Image (cartoon, rainbow, N blue to C red; front, side):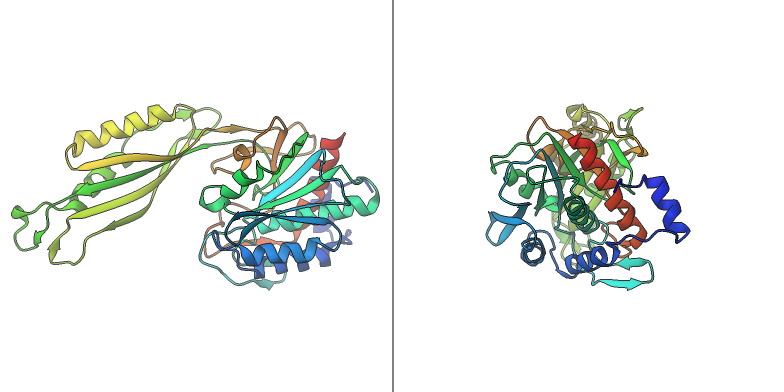
Length: 363
């Protein structure tokens, strides 16, 4: 059966004239995955859920990343080598939010990022195997831990000793094929103060005041812009400092993430260091972490809308000369939030999209 185009599938679903034969199993698998709490760094339940489902129809290998944390590699039959790899991550950000469903809408941690992709990919491969459109040696599946905490799962996958012609990565892209994604750069900022009684601020030095002044200057600093990626953006996600309201804070710190629109990460660092030095050069220190350049992707498959996304992914962490596609159901706009959700229709669309991408990669 030829996979429907995204537009054709959307119209069919909207008119209720088409019902996927796999919808029930898709929803069931998705529920099983979401109900398995696999908060990043504690993914063992997710590994067990995947292994339990996949070993019915696939050969399953578990790759230890650290302690009880394991990646899952699966393939039909005995052909470990495959032309196409379909992959995503099954770890999620905290806190865990239980699965719930109301009509077409499904809520819970990981529903969109990225267990929707995982479920749709598995069902897509099963459908293609059942129809005979792919055979043993065509496709393998890889599901990794740690994407939300530095990418150690995908990093470990580089030691599997495998190569592929094409790799299809799953993330919540609103069922749109991604042309590129921004780079990433993190920084830690610390401020050194002098403790004292809050009634006599002139005899101390407030680390929090210093930190706030530095961060205010950073937020007002113009960062690079490019036509392809738009603005470089910055988010201060964590601030700590002080011990009590009546004590001048001796120390304060913050952590931030930058989504880089340019490959000139050193230039971004220089601009921010200059900004801090203009305000508090003596008592504030800025250190940078988590470097990752912007990533270009393949999008040479007809029938998909394309886009550029602002988030970073596991794509560059998997070494090789393979073609790289990024696609999946759900939206990043609700990922990492208490409102994370996806629809059944999104999942069905993704199954058809993944089928189309797999066949295109093989042909």
